[in-house]
Image (cartoon, rainbow, N blue to C red; front, side):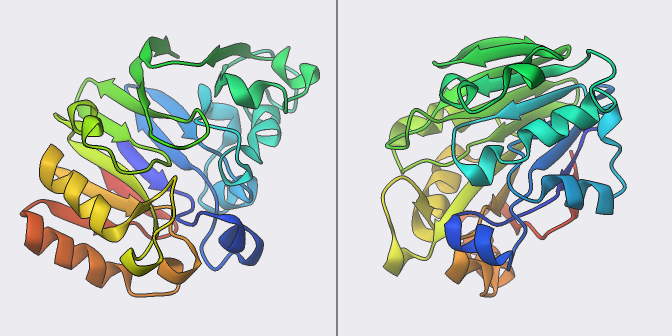
Length: 245
C-alpha cells in the first residue's frame, strides 16, 4: 500500500524562519520505493524524528528553486548515498535548481533535470511533471502508482487549465499559502483551492504548505468547510501525518 508522510506542512519565508509549521518535505512510499519530495529547510531533522532512514531513499524530487522546497536536498543526498560512500539513487530536479547544487553531490547520484511538462520514469515509478501558473517555472508531480494516482500540485496560482492535469487523482495535494483576504500571486488561497477541488474531483484532497497566518489558525475547520461545500473529502495536513492511499 502506498503512503505519504508529511514531514512538514509549512511554506513561505516567515514559516521557514519561525518553524511554526515544519518546512520539511513529503516522504512517499510506493511500489517498493521511497521517494522524498521537496526537501525544504529542516527535512533532515524531521525525517530522523519520524524514523525515516535516508539510506533507503531511491529518489529525491525538487519542484523549484525556493528554499522551502530544496534547502535540504544536498544533505538528503548524503543520506541516500550512505554518507557519500555509495553512488546510488536519483536526484530529479527542476532545471532552475541545478545551479544551486554542488558537482560533488550531483556526481554521487543519477542526476536528472526537467524544464517542461512531460512523462518520466524515476526509480521505477511512472510520473509526470505537470505545469503550474505564475510561479517561477515551477512544476508539480503526478505519480501513476500500482494502487492509484497521487498528484502534488506544488506552488501555483489558480488557473482552470490545471483541472485537466488534476482530474483522476486519488489524492490531490494542494499547497495553500494564504487566506482569501490576503491572497498573493504565485500561490493558492483557500477559496481557490476549494474551486480546484470542486472542479477536479479527486477522491481525497490534502491542504498543506501553509503560510504564517494559515499555519497558526484552525486549518482542520477550513478543510471541513471545503469538504461540505465540494462533497470531496478534504484534509488539512499536520506535521508528521501519515496518509495511506
